[in-house]
Image (tube, rainbow, N blue to C red):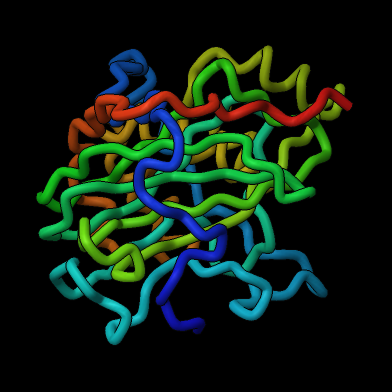
Length: 265
C-alpha cells in the first residue's frame, strides 16, 4: 500500500472554480409486489482467472492504511466503494456517480479530480465536507461526458489543513466506459424493475451501474445492498451508514478557467 502524502495528480485546494458534487437520497422505490416476491442475489462475481488484483504500485488504492490517517477517525478508513481486485470500474453511463465512504473527520474541505488517459483534466471540484461519517456520492455533471473505450483516473481527497496542502488523505481509482452488447441491451430494456437490471449488470461485471441502482434502492432492499458490498470485500459497517447530504459548492474566489471535457474521439 502506498503512503498517502501528496495526491497523485498534485491537487491543491481552489485550483479551479468548483462545479457540482451532490449527495442525496434518490427516491427510486420498487413496488411492494416485487419486494415480497423477489429476493435477487446480488453478489458481484470475482475477477476472471488471469485478471489480477489492482496494484498499488500502479496508482490504485481503495482505502487508506491506519498509519495514513491525518484528520479522519474510527476503525474504517476513507474507502472507495469499488471492488479491490479489478483494475478499473466498468460503466455504461456517460455521467456516472462514484461513491466514497468518508469516516468521521475534522477536515473542512474535500476535493475530487478526474483525468483522461492523456492526463488531461476532465473534472475538478472543491467542496465543503461534512464531519459526520457517511457515503459521499459524486455525480459527474452533464458537461462531463466519458468517452466509450477510455479509462479515466480519479481521486477523492480529504483536505486536512487549509495551511498545509501536503496534509491530505485520499483514495483513487479508475473507471472505464463501455457499451452494452445487443443481447444485454435487450435484456436490460425488457427488465421491468431496477433490481432486475442491477442483477443483469452484476452478472456482466458492470460495477458502477450495479452500484448506482442499489444505492437508490438501499432503503427498500437493504439485504441486497449489504450483499453487494460484502461480495467485493467492503466492511459491513459501510453498508449501514447513511447517504449523508453533501456537498456544498464553494464560492468562487477568483476567475479561473473551466475544466474542459476530453476531445471527442
